[in-house]
Image (spheres, one colour):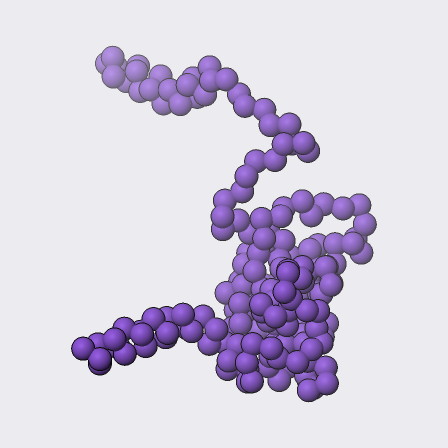
Length: 185
């Protein structure tokens, strides 16, 4: 038995000894909260279009993707008098049961309209089982300035496609301006 055989266990305890002599950091949790990572998986949020219409089209793909069966969606048809989303349908009933939810994010990946995202809110504990079943009203993003609560007519375009092409407009106008400038030269 050589000297290296004796030093190997001591070297293995190096991390433990290093941690023992470091000053521990105590966070006064209820008053002071540690910031979460930008892609933290917290409470869900149903997003809105810039005019206030809901992005959820009631397709139920999030409910099908959920391995814990924590999401319940019931879709309904939009009408011209009562329009809640730009598409043909909207999520009339939307519930997430946080007693079952494992915050995996598979529902976010399944959503075709990016209607469902996860916030950085992680304080979900409660003393009542009923209050941990979040309804559509609790999950909807708050109305910002310039938004109108649905139901109302589409304001960002004539058709459903106009809403889904909103992100392309600045790029199209930039490409159009550069091609027009090259034609005049």
